[in-house]
Length: 198
Image 1 (tube, rainbow, N blue to C red):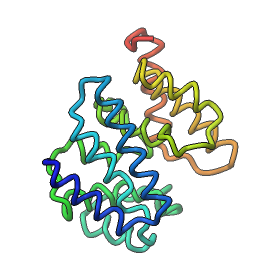
Image 2 (image 1 turned 60 degrees about the vertical axis):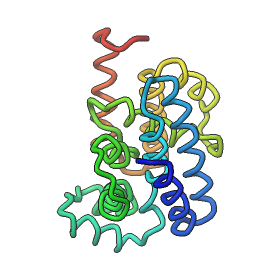
Image 3 (image 1 turned 90 degrees about the vertical axis):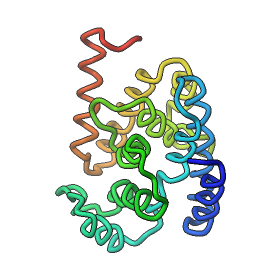
Image 4 (image 1 turned 30 degrees about the vertical axis):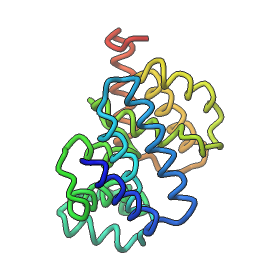
């Protein structure tokens, strides 16, 4: 990805997203770059994934379903009932087809930015966390603490975001995607077995 491509992506996102979502997208790209600097991750990859993570967010549910079906992407039962959740899967397809992103790490960072997954790469963790802590976010109760932690220990910040996300979903009665629970269980087990630096 060259800087010219980044400019093109940014312009395209400005056109296809509503103003609030575009502001959020810039915040995620900015935060992802900062986290990449701290964790020896390629900043261009982080910026690209940050700019594209919500590229399908403003599409209709029907369009998201259509994109997933056309690209033979599996739609699970939770997503069937809540098609708005498909924006990550549809976004990964758009990044590959429309923006010619071939880097699997970037595509996975987009694909798993809402649920996480067991065994995430550093870039995937960065996008997942940046989406939660970017400067425009206000609603989460532990934001100040998690923002600080993100620049000290990526894995512990990831666990905190997963923990807070699950607690929030359960408290509001929203369905929990099984992948989010699986991801949390995976990293909790790593922490408990002493494999994560605390």
